[in-house]
Figure 1: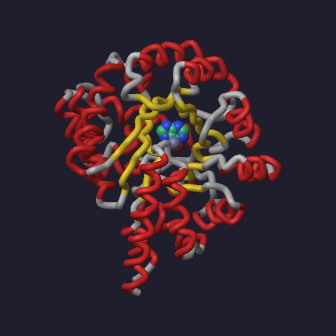
Figure 2 (figure 1 turned 120 degrees about the vertical axis):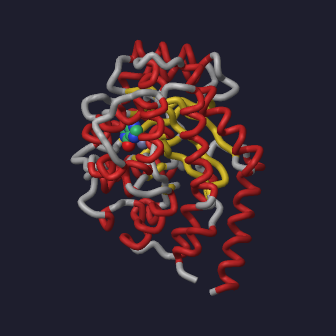
Length: 340
Ligand code: HPA
Ligand code: ZN
């Protein structure tokens, strides 16, 4: 059996996934009709044709436009359930999912509506598919820290549902330290912290995400490779990176997939993971990311198994749950070896 068959079989977690970025063109058009939202597209083909991006901002403009069809609780439920059903077939057994409440609140959709829709799908998936999950609320870094404090106030009423806070949206010129105070308050309230850093911004942003925001994981982190001392620090401190190869390719952070740093990250001893970011927009879900980057940079079976194991160790699961998922990986690997 091929390495692709191994990728399909491996139990894994997904740790870098924006739920609004899973909105497939088909569902986008269904929800636009259901909610009487006018979009500049008449067909699925027209929507897909618009998904050509020069950089992160180009993508974000389309991403925020797309989410304008999400209005009712059931829209968020349908969106989340569609993603969970899809990746259950990819071997995803645990997902840590980002959402962007500020982008919905500024359109008049309440925080509670968003959380209720997403959380009920997560609960349903727990019951029906034995999938576990955690929810990560992102602050939009193109907005002010005051706006982030308002989102945090809302999150504090949902501590049973929201596990961590993150930082996403436009990175250039918006360093993590602009959000030091709101992250300090979030951590004091008991939320774990993560942040997008080094996607388009410099290695220094990865450093301040660690120093000022005290993040437990770095989302993307590609530009950290410009600073060998920073990489050495992240290896020493076992700071996981949630990497997203197809996203980096489609947003032109790398000229082609063979330039992706995931192999470098593994070889350096980093806790690197592979994830999908916004799969509907970037042309592939988690297994597509594993397979395409494996072919492009030459990952072997040891690398792929390591990535799946890293996805478990880098997760926010309790140690006993990590242990049982790691054992499931071992037993799948053993049966894959028997078949080759
Ligand atoms: N980067 C930053 N912000 C985002 C992304 C991303 O890839 N996707 C959704 N929000
Ligand atoms: Zn992201």
